[in-house]
Length: 83
Image (cartoon, rainbow, N blue to C red):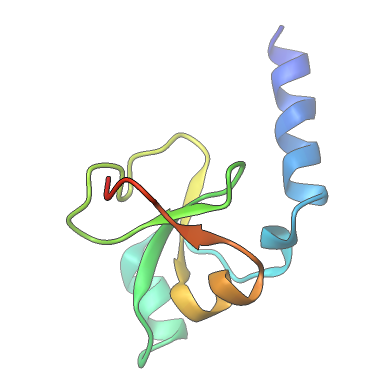
């Protein structure tokens, strides 16, 4: 079962546009990469990002900090329910 989950995660990275974007494990590293942009938390498999202060910011299992403009260019979008 773990093998299947690992393979699915790998495919989600390889076959989504998010894989090409710069992603970071810390908010600070992302902010250094894009000092004039907003840092968001991107749930990589779903392509949904969350803003600081929202429920899932920094908390989803398969996510990373990214620059919002890069995420938008890759086709990702903000959460629709404000969480």
